Length: 147
Image 1 (cartoon, rainbow, N blue to C red):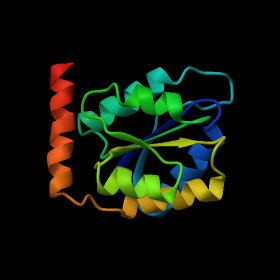
Image 2 (image 1 turned 120 degrees about the vertical axis):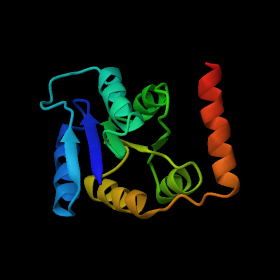
Image 3 (image 1 turned 30 degrees about the horizontal axis):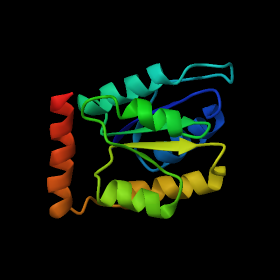
């Protein structure tokens, strides 16, 4: 699987850890920045991850910020992106299983590194349930066409 990953200044260290974790498991990783802890705006990073996922260049995306709140909002402005804020096992299971999230957003001020790694493993291992949830995801996609 090919995964786009980006982080603002808050998430640079976690981004490196998760990228290494992904590569150790055979995934291809496109690291889109940031690369230092110098302050950087997250919306352009979210847009680049979103473009790559929406066009199919990358299968999935991961964005890391301080809380993740702004990042999830920015990611979901991109047509074709269904970003879920991963703050708990429950949230991850719902975002992937019910909402077919294709971008995972993590907050470094909310989660420890080990917990973020565990949530990533759960996110990658949770299949989309389809069924009634597929109809709802289609309705979400239809909302994008109205915007």
